[in-house]
Image (tube, rainbow, N blue to C red):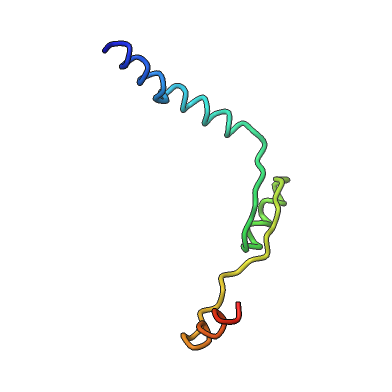
Length: 74
């Protein structure tokens, strides 16, 4: 029974392991994929952060009839 508890506890991340992982993440080079916010992309570029910009915006809200027609076509 004690062996099972030891095995289970070793699989659970400890606070020290989480802090170490977070520190490694925060100390690593930042690479960003920016989706649709040009001002955010520009701000990152000014800080010499590697950023890829995806030109995206949410699809427009269509009326039900138009949605149904597009569903049939696509």
